[in-house]
Length: 442
Image 1 (cartoon, helix red, strand yellow):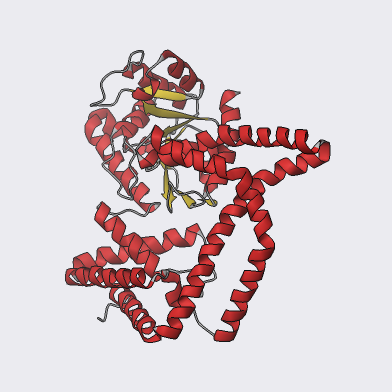
Image 2 (cartoon, rainbow, N blue to C red; image 1 turned 60 degrees about the vertical axis):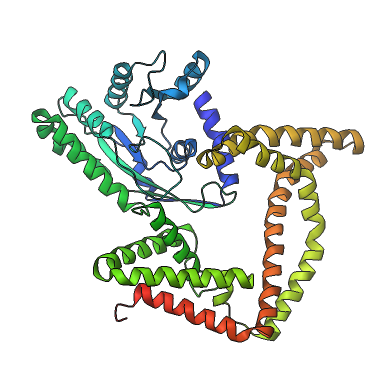
């Protein structure tokens, strides 16, 4: 009961915190015949487990580090949420947690045909680098099969969690699900050489995770991929397909091209970096967004759009102010509190959701009581008022971003008047960057 209740509330929190949560090949997560081990990358601490729990219809069990279970209360609470503690190497031994008991529980969960989630990287860091995988997942899968005579059909499903900006409010997530992989093909080898069979299966898990992720070899390369994507892919380009799926596909293509360049034309990589630095520096000096390099300018339609935008601002301002008034305290307080609780950026999003699920309902209740006392709002009027609080809050957030966009538009228009030749030169630099990445004839 507690598991289902928390799944509902956390699911609502995730949908509100992130703008788009898209799942590719979700049907592969449906539990059919036999047990399933879901393996995933681990860039966003608790959020990763919550997201997987949200998209799976069946109840799932998680392996989690034992340090989370450092008191009897936490142990009891987390165990009721299907978490299985494991003492990790280098973190000491948590009282009340025995690894042999935990592993036995994993074997029993899988033997019962249930779903187990494991993050084989072990630790969580905000990066697109897929770190070295522990062999524990492979050992659990193969040991379970061996104990059940190879008749269970344990399958491993790789899930790629691709966050656009994981800690940022109203960013996006793409969850990509690989095909289930039957582990029984490694069973005979496991009976002869447990270590080698586990290593081979672990290498296969890594290969499958790399299929569903945007991966980089280092943090420097990760930053390079993100910068290239930001410059070359903007919202003013003529593309029919948009959203987080397109974003991840484009970043995978950039990664693939960089890998080819590193092998075939390594000298070109430095040229790409220098060109990117030049474009970034000029954009910063001119105070415009990358988007405007792809924006086609026609004076009459542009001025018309600006005037309509200003009229819309005047009309929408009261609604936005209503949203700000009723949500600014919660927003700022959560923004102040979360970094106080943890300095690790990987915890910002899950902590913000946890704080928000308590803070927002409490403040909305207080606003409702105040409205009842001051304006004698009852029944239907009260329902409408309460529903307006979160909806206008989200509108206010969007409205502030809209105002920023208008300011960028004005800056862009002024640049077209005063520094048209500079803008043209910058557009040519962008074309050259695109050619450096994609044109093999250079």
